Structures are given as C-alpha cells and as structure tokens.
Amino acid sequence: MRLVFFGSSPFGLPTLERLCAEHALVGVVTQPDRPSGRERRLSPTPVGEFASRTCPGVPIAKPQRVRDAAGEIRGWNADAWVVIAYGQKLPRTLLEGVFAINLHASLLPRWRGAAPIHAAVMAGDGETGNSVIALADRMDAGEVFAREGEEIGPAQTTGDLHDLLAVRGAALVEGVLDAWARGGAKGEAQDESRATLAPKLSSADAWVDFSAPARKCRGSINGLSPAPGVRVQFRGAGLKLLRATEGPSGAVDAPGTVVDARDGLIACGEGTTLRLLEVQPADRRAMAWGAFVAGHRVERGETIVGGTP
Image 1 (tube, helix red, strand yellow):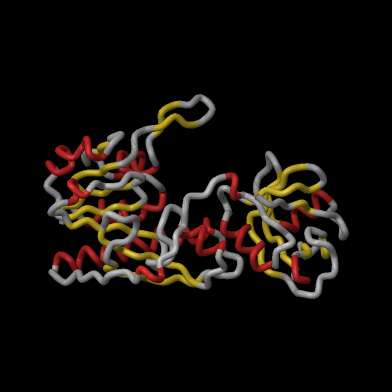
Image 2: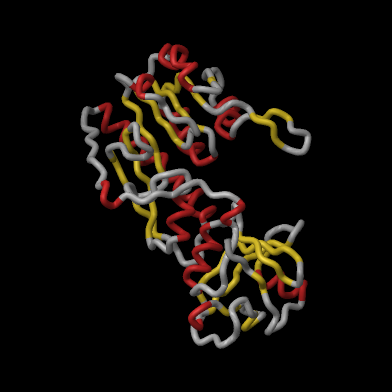
C-alpha cells in the first residue's frame, strides 16, 4: 500500500518504522527544523531525523503551513495517509477524497486534545489506550475505527504509558489499514456527551498541593512525569518528584511532612500518605527515593514544600 505519514513527535516513531518496513512509504510530512540546544542550531523533528536515517529515498516535506505543500503531497499519489502527533491541522480541502486516519493516545471520546496521557493519569483513570480515528474538522472528533485499552498501574507515569502506547499503536494502525484495503474499515461515531478535553500543559501546571488527598497528589506527580514535572522545595532547594504511589492512611502530621524517611512517606490531606519512589534533585540525574535519602540523610519531621497555582 502506498502511504504518506504525517508526524513530528517520538510517539509516531514505532508506527513510522513499521510502515516503512511493510508498505511503500511514498512521503513523510513533518514540522520544520527548529533551533535547539545551547547553540540554537537547526534540528529536525524526531520524525524528520528518523525518516531520513531509516527510510532512505523517501521524500520528506517540512512546510511551515501544510496547505502550502498540498500539491507536492497529493503528487505522491498515496492510497492512504497516517497522521500521528503532526502538530498542524490538515485543512478540509487537503483531505478531500483521501482516506486519512489518526492515532490518538486515549479511549475516545475521553481526553481529546494535546495531552491525553497526562490527563488520564492526573485524573486517576484506571485505564487509557489508543484510538484510530478518521480526521474531522473538530479536534479528535472523527469516527473511531479501532480502540485498544491499557490498564494504568498505580506507579505508572505518563512517560511509561507514552512509550507503551506508541509501540502498541503501530499494530492498531496496521489493522485499520488492512481492513480498509479489504473494504471492511467501518467507523462509529463518538458519543459527544462523554467527550472530555486534555489541553496542552506547561511549567505553570508543574505543582502539587500536599493538602489534597494522596490519590490526587499521586495523579499530579505521575501524570506530569517526566515533563513538565512536579517541582517542590526541600531544605530550600528545588526537587522534582517523578514517581509515587499511595501509602497507608492514618497520618496526623501536617501535609508535606516526612512521616517515614526510609519508606518515602509524606503526609497528605484527609489523613492520607504519599509514598515517593523516584525524585530528581536540581542539576542531578533522576534517582530512587532510597538513594536520595541516603545521600541527604532525610529525617522524619522534615517538610517538603509543594505549591498551589
């Protein structure tokens, strides 16, 4: 099958790799190169870099506005388009007469938008997953061709789920393409009454309020890990919290107090406790809580200062 792949972020790489190996990939469309690093050198997107290295001979378009490359893209004469975290909306005029599908990292209609995995973990959902949908005028609102669920473990972070769903999404996309080639790809409309939104996150969201119950604190920490990351203060220095689970209830200490240094138990609201599993001191690598305790001699009764918006 002749395919065009639209994408920019690492989430699409497993699918791109599979399409490149198993189909006639006739073109890749990604965002333009951007300045990066301390020297601000122009660097390609992860998709652009991967495609140039892994899919030799395949043309790569990097338009500032995708509509400006419409002639080139249509000239590739593809059978279908696959879109994954591209970063630009494809206009209706460009999509006319094209079978175009999108891989989205949620069980739609729940968590439409830019940060679906973050939103699912932060909300305390027990399950997330992937959906393959038709492109539509409204964001992530197209008919659903396939879904696949994935349980969210109590200590799983957005980073963990991102990598897992990226790999599993490749097979889900392949299944829809196979069904379409056989004439059997049928979509179902989303239930608009169940739709929720997952807007893009920033450093302004990187906080945790220990006066909230531990389940909410856990959701914030795991859902914002590894980026933008929850930042707190310990002994006047910055500390990023990367992974946590809920601890036992019955705490009587003020929120943010270290209840058990060795086990990483921190008092939260409603008498609950949070168990810290992984942290990152300023200008250091991520480390297990046990290693942090050993290096800093953390003691019961000390305070970790969270924040509020």
